[in-house]
Image 1: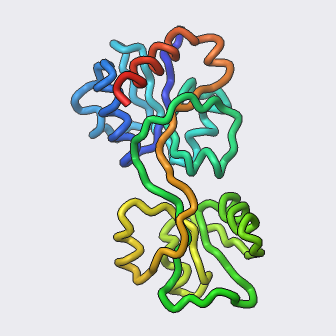
Image 2 (image 1 turned 90 degrees about the vertical axis):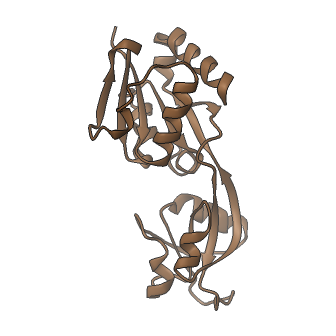
Length: 206
């Protein structure tokens, strides 16, 4: 039987999830976090780790290439993939917010919002009764208001320092975000015992 395959994003979520797995009793090599590989096998634990872009993790799990994964709630809401969300791991806490330059005036004629999360942004402003044009960007969202591409942005905030450093202010908080443990539906049937064990062990340390 092939190893249990876990999709994870590189960076903060990966580092915190690895700590959590170790606390849950999984023996992962000491050099694990330093590896540059995109696929890391841990044969002694019958595990395989696939390191993907944060937005791609739910896709790998939905398509069954990975059995389970760790993904931010922001990505789950944006991507709306058909996976089971089994556990709030309570790691990588941050929140989704609307921000702009300090001189922003509400009521502009053609409101433009830049975001990595177009679906979430459209849904949020719709709920506020506001029609906006959403411009999808893949990174450095703070540039949009500075360069005049958009009046506001919707982005992830953890400490608020990046906004401050770029002269932006937070206008509204949209939603608290943490990382979730997600599972592929078929894998849950075929590898239920292994997956349940992992959930149980993680639950004990969350």
